[in-house]
Length: 114
Ligand code: 5GP
Picture: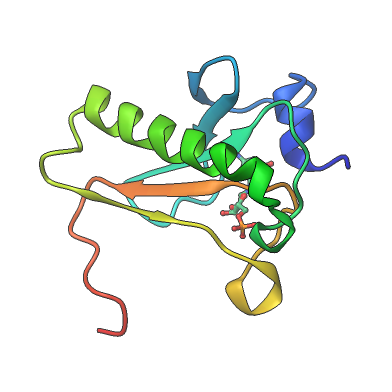
C-alpha cells in the first residue's frame, strides 16, 4: 500500500504534523471541515479500511482514539468537546485507503441529521 498518508509518514509530502508517537502520526487535514481538523494515522501497519481490520489489530483503532484524545486534551479542546469520525468505503466518503481517524473540534458541530 502506498497512499498520500504513507508519503506524509515518510516525509516525502509536506504536512502540518501536530502529534507523533511510536505508532501514530497526527497532521492537519488539507481541507478542514471544522476549525480544528486533524487526521490520526497508524505509522507502521497498513490497513485500507475499517472493514479490513482484523480482531488481532483492534488495538490500532484504540491507539488512534487515544492519540486523538491526548491531542484534544493537550490543546484544550477536551472540556468543550469534539468529534471523531472514521469513514469506510464509498458510502462512508472514504478517499484515502489507509485507515485513519478524523478529529473535529474548535466549534459546536451540531448533531448528526440536524
Ligand atoms: P477520508 O475521506 O478518506 O475519510 O479522509 C481523507 C482526508 O484526507 C480528507 O479529509 C482530505 O481532505 C485529506 N487529505 C487528502 N489529501 C491530503 C493531503 O495531501 N494532505 C493532507 N494533510 N490531507 C489530505
